[in-house]
Length: 386
Image (tube, rainbow, N blue to C red; front, side):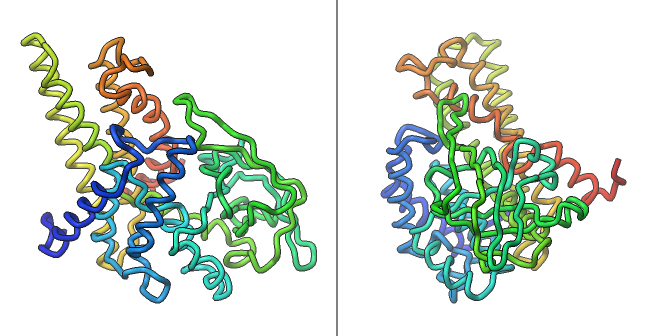
């Protein structure tokens, strides 16, 4: 693995940074993307359209499907810059659903759905989690029953990001209740305007409406919307989850938060003993950030070598998520009681309180730390199950 960018990669990083500084206006004064508000959503959509015009939205896709054929390291450079500025560099369709369809979709599905992703015109959500199937995703109970040229869907999904704004859903449902739970699942492409779909909002403790519950009541899905083979959806889904977990987005925001924190500390009247402790802890976070960054780039480097990183992606995801939680805890304690405020009196433009509240979910989203450690133990270290 090389620890230095090539001149071409460095030039690309500067190009992306300059573009974001000039064009991204949805996160002014903030490190994290606004969640749930119409204003934030419209800003993200407008920005993605500009990315699509440059073919950056699908940067690593093959040229024949509207991408630039960028290398995994170049894609990671792009993702890092976007995450640092809190800009929406991709969406679920571009970084998860599209690549999955390229692997498992039919020619008809690729022609029908990939162009909308490339143009930034279609919005996707991912229908995986259920009330009793989160970390144990294979326990999902939403049913898909064959009925001629259709499948009839009944069940419930929960914690579905942007379901209330999505045009389409990538859905997992059980098609064989008698099979072992990993082997009776199928994947589907669902039009969110299909009769029988009901969406209920879920507002998180930070006040954002990014998640929803989705209910299916005799929803009829055409057979041609089945992705891959029937009852093989688990293997399709695991590949989709690998795309989600392998990004640098789990660590890059910490760099911006750390920078804002250091600027804040320099303006505070700290006692000598306190100053030493704060300075030491900030130095430790700077080191942790660099470790997490290298773990993420190692995943990209492995992909460039033609390998399929699995436990390596779990390492990067776990370290990045937990490092951000530690940083959030340090920051809100550093700000004292004022750090809990969500008003104009809050220091750092609400950064401490918002970051702390949102960081609680970092070790849950995209697979809990417990699940990631199981992957690291069994697939990385070769330890036995149980």
